[in-house]
Amino acid sequence: MKVFKKIMNAVAAVENVILVVSTLLILVLTVGNVFSRKVIHRSWSFTEELVVAVFVLITLMAAALACREGELVNLSLVTDRLPEKLKKPSVILTTVLCIIFTAILFWFGMEKVITQLENGKRTFVLNWPEWIFWSFVPIGSGCMILHFIEYCLDYCTGNLKKEDK
Image (cartoon, rainbow, N blue to C red):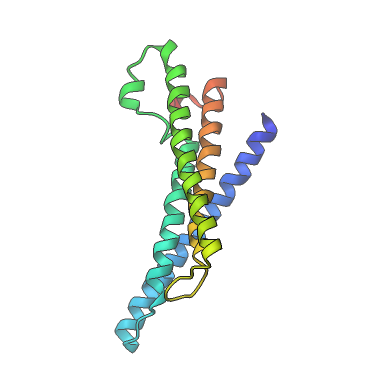
């Protein structure tokens, strides 16, 4: 369990770095494009394409980190009112359902990546392979699955702080 926790801490650290770098990238591109349009009257046509794709990555990485804290696992309105003996089974059930949904997201994301690789489709403005941007979906959903499992194990083994439960 300790090795798994170390691996998950490393995954979370990488996700945090991705979030920071991606957010800074969006900030620089958006501000730079606005500045370019207002001052030199030239738009950076690639910014919309890149910002939308990076925003998908940010959304999935943030959701994965939320899974780590159990934020996407439970509906506390319901689970907080359950008797103590039903709380653990409810967390396990919701975790299994969330993993199933996220696995479906992973599956369709991978299908899209494979299709884009086979077709050789490229983006309109940057002319980059589209599979690069579509790969954010299976990467993010894979991280979410890992964090769902991590949270459930922590919850079931009692490794969560009291305020986390």
